[in-house]
Image (tube, rainbow, N blue to C red; front, top):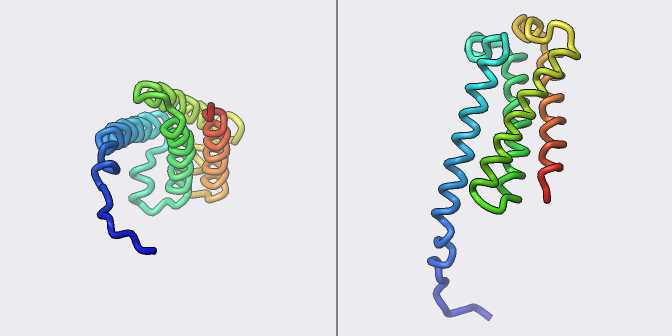
Length: 141
């Protein structure tokens, strides 16, 4: 049977301000992550990417994915906007730490990425994404 009632869209739009606040905060956290990450790493990702260095693009892309996975989990599981921001900052810190660990484990990682070695870029990306998945899983409460 086809319903003849008009859908009440206002009940869907009532949460639009919350969506906008969460999205805005998430974008600010993402921007902060990109700025901090690209300043923390010794290679110059944006210059390398502009010059066509695929290893740098893969590495940075993996770091971004590794950050937004737990950020998304924090958004889905947060009890409030402040809760989401706090856990977003935790995700940011853990992802920065992940690069530090990857750098310690992989000999001359920044130099190898700067030279365009795809093996280094892919490994760095995989490491970042793996840490991000674990971080996201730990943020379900």
